[in-house]
Amino acid sequence: MPFFEEIEIGHRREIGAYTFTAESIKTFAQKFDPQRFHLDEEEGKNSLFGGLAASGWHVGSACMSLLVADGQRLARVAAARGEEVAVWGPSPGFRDLRWIRPVLAGDTVSYANVVIDKRTSASRPGWGILTARTTGTNQRGEEVYAITASAFVPMRKGG
Image (cartoon, rainbow, N blue to C red; front, side):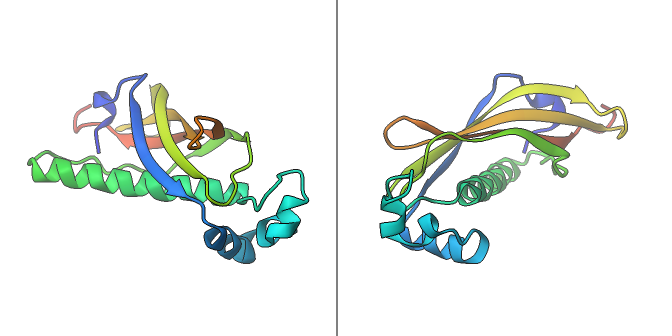
């Protein structure tokens, strides 16, 4: 992963895609969001969603899983080139979480994020705070998910 100084506002990163199957929707819902329209096709069809709908938390969790996996992939690639890899810190939070359209069984959501802000941390010397807007788009090109989140990113030594 890059260091704080190497990241530019406006940089776009394609994170990956996830297909929401009926089975994955129900499995997630049984554990974390057991509402009828996430658990039963008929209930989903008769709901405002019009079909078996993924929990918004499932949509966000799939995004997080892909984000971490892509970060690990980028770190492996950089390490293989002999580059120093920045180990990012935790997130101090997020805002503007939106579940814009329902994600139904069979939908594939592709996620991407864009860096929208960066600043040095006032409380943690040697660290910057990166803010990015992450969106999810279904196979029809419709935006279904969006979130603005921040992360602590280390500066190069002496930065």
